Each structure stands twice: as C-alpha cells, then as structure tokens.
Image (cartoon, rainbow, N blue to C red; front, side, top):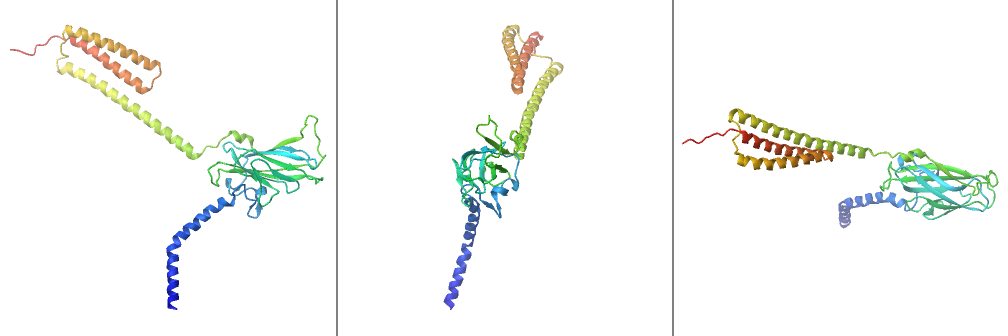
Length: 331
C-alpha cells in the first residue's frame, strides 16, 4: 500500500515536471492544425454553411469584397445534353494576383478538374484549386438529359501571399446559371455560343490601397531627409557667413588699430598678383560652371567660398603693394 502511494507520488512529480513540455507540444499542435486542415484547396464547410455558398469567415473580415473580380469564361447560354465545356476561372485584384477558388453545380452535371485544380475531398462533384495560383481550367459535362436550368456557385479568394488568414485576403462569390437546351436565342455571329461571367468592381482594379504603415514610414523618411538637407544647408551657410564676417572684421580692425596692411615690395607683389589672379579667374569659371550645370547647393557653396577666397587673395596683394613703407627697426 505504502509502495503504491510512493509510486503515485513519483508519477505525479514526473507529470508536473513534464507539464511545461506537454503544454508547449499541445500549443504547437493547435497552431499546426489550421494549416493541416487545408492541404490543398479550401474546406467544404464553414461551420454549418457551405463555403461555396457563403464564403469563408477567416479571410477579408468574413464578408465578400467587390475589390475582387471573379470571372469564369467559356460558359454557354444553354447547354447541349452530354456536351463537355471548357471553363477558365480567373481572379483579378489591384494588388493580389493569385489565390484559390471553389466551383459546384449541385451535381447536376459533371465537373472535372483541369490543370491546377482538384476534386473537393468532401464533395467530389465540386472542384477547387490544387495550389495557390490563377486562371484554372475546369471541364463541365452537361447532363445526358434535359434537367432544366443548371445553377452554379463559384467563390474566389485573392490572397496577399503572407501566409496568414487576415484582412489582406479578399474574396467574392459569383452565382450563375446555364439555361436548358434550346431555350436561348443565339446570334449567327456568335458561333461559339459561350460567354464570360464576372462579379466585382473593375474600377477597383486600378486603385491600389496604400498600407497606412508604409505611408507613415514614407512620410517620416521625407521629414528626415528634409531635416537632414535643411540642417546641412543652414549649418554650412551660417559657417560661410561667419567666415566672411570674420575676414571683414579683421580688415576693419587692421586698418583702425593696426596701422593698415603691411607693405609688399613690387618685386614680390607682381608675380604673387599674377598667380593669385589666374587662380581667381579659374575658380570664378568653376563657380559659374556649378551654377550653369545645376549642381547641388553644397557644391555651389564650396565653389563660391573658394572663389571668394582667391579674390580676397588678389585684393590683399594689391592693398599690400599700395601700402606705404613703414620702418619699424631703428638703431
């Protein structure tokens, strides 16, 4: 008895120690379950409702969207008994180019999957996509006898490709019918006697909804670039103004309190003036080029500053050459 109680206590301790691992395993299974539930094509039922009739509540907020244009081409106005028709199912959306579908004729005729399509496991009379894609081919064989008007249900889902069931996946439902044999009028020019049936808003195909996060990110990037560019412009412009002001102030104080610029002998002033004049002319041409070629403000400001520096050098040479000689050493 005592040994049995010890065994129970031991088993309980083992279970308690393993409970975190068991919880993680259970949580993982719950996450995987939705993915395993649809290995290919949508489910046949959504609760008590048929997906082909009511759509899917796990995509696009659970409501059909006119932003998705669901089309089926090759549909006859009226069928010939026993005749096989080739349908092409297409999805169109402004940004979502691929998705899935499901088609059913309530088992009046015979639907056969073409390339990219499969029969629905729960209802082999219906067909759906075998994998994410577009422009699926489906074959429909009309009944062998006149069964009256044949009704069809087609649901198409255009997905955003992020692998999640979210509001970015949008779907729409198309209900249509094919009339009984010899019940519709056919024009002589309409040799094929087939049509394309669609549902959805074609205008929405040309309007791509912008992601609010992407819009805000782009706005912040523009603000940052503007701040960077204007900040640099204000900084370097202010620095240039300070340098020019400092040079003018130095000239003022030199003349008022320093006795003027020092004298430069003409034997030195002439070659120095020529060198500085050539440099000033070259840099003036460079500044003109920067304006004419539409360079950035940084290049233009740099060319302007070095041009002013070279012109100031010519000015200093002339001023020093004209300055009177001053004898500061006396014996």
